Image (tube, rainbow, N blue to C red):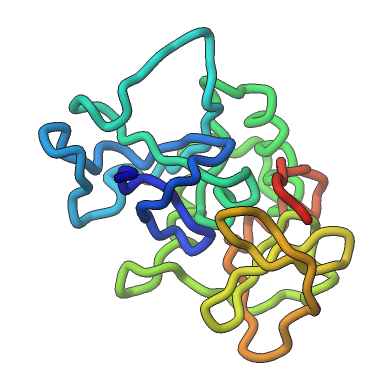
Length: 204
């Protein structure tokens, strides 16, 4: 049975067969003896997005008392969940995100902890669940890579069109009109609007 380490756009960590194209972590949130998660879904405010392959480093997933390996279908999903690029394994993209985040949020040279503090406030609601945000503009005007929700579904915006998210990819569909809210943290949406281009996989 697959481990419980796949992350949805809602930030939930579930068990499904699909691994995805990016890895990341939120600190140590598992028991290596049982390879199961603790109740708390994070221990650090630095929720990062990593590449799955880096300098031939091999890790046995959830096998030791080290950071917990999480997996995302693509970068847009990871950003929606509240993560940001890692400055260690993908420094170039992390710097591009930082520059766009600074421009979009009108902050001069933010540090990683400063971005993490803002993102952390935008990730979770008072109950610890995923925070939904009001739409800052019409759905189809959101920058590419933004993800919204309506009902139980998540929708990616790309080129002014909406695509329903699933573990197997994105499917083109009409834009939702009822009870729509923003899943991607607003500060990240502003970074997308300032030119950060996320990796999006599996559009059909």
